[in-house]
Length: 342
Ligand SMILES: Nc1ncnc2c1ncn2[C@@H]1O[C@H](COP(=O)(O)OP(=O)(O)OP(=O)(O)O)[C@@H](O)[C@H]1O
Image 1: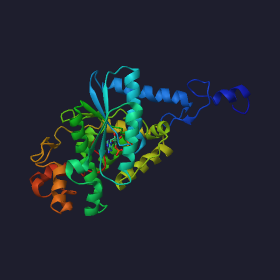
Image 2: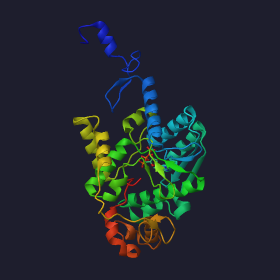
Image 3: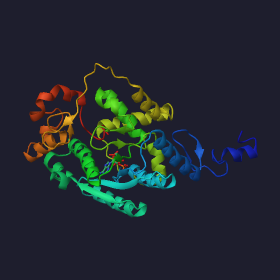
Image 4: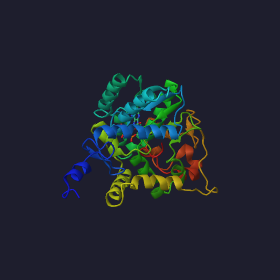
């Protein structure tokens, strides 16, 4: 058609929405050719729709945005949330919350980005550090345990640090930049690991409503590639091996099958029905620090205890020692690594 008719040729090269400007990109989700201006509009309005359809926020709420500053997602989230809050009068008090894990050359750099965002978007910033909270930086932990299990320490401590920071800010909810790719990977990982407890909650757009601070994921249906297109920010990414496998698998599916592969995987996670007879971990509180835990001690306390006693492997993998008596339930939980459990 393009070769045979000049007018058709010009039209078919125009943005599929405005039909006036040249397309700047092909949307990974729909394969539509779209211009820059229309892309920004549909990108933001799709997120607005997710927020409204899922009642993510109520007027007057205080919301912390988990801002790592490291990769595109949370930086774009801070930008989009402040835009939509203003444009659609959500009436939210927004804050940036950053966890400084103490990783020289990585988090110290990305914290500079977050400090710039504080000024750019006019959002107050709170930084909480592993050093202040736990007495250890990730650099010190890695010096002691090596690189092999450091994801476990980092993931467990970060989760709790975000809750503690959110409590200091007295916010009602924490919004994170987890995107559709992250969630599809997590669905796959939890299926591959047979981790029913996590599978049952990993597709929820709001989690932890019974815990200290509910968390929500406004980017649940937003593709990572689109977030990168919006941000133009180079990614810093160090996947753990298993998550890297799931990520590659999803990318292959996206290439060979359908652009919808990511959304299809999230849908299959959402549709999963778990037999009511399945034994799930019961939530209680850590006897040591009072944080939520299905064990006698929470994972962060077990890890810290190991570090402080010079036995850092104590809390890695299957729980030993203090939580031993809960071993059976523990086995249901699988390994805490990366951001499986958000
Ligand atoms: N150090 C941190 N401080 C505050 N929030 C964080 C931190 N690390 C992760 N998060 C939150 O958890 C979400 C998912 O974490 P993940 O590890 O995938 O992030 P990332 O790849 O470092 O981040 P991003 O691209 O969002 O900057 C982030 O989008 C962010 O909201």
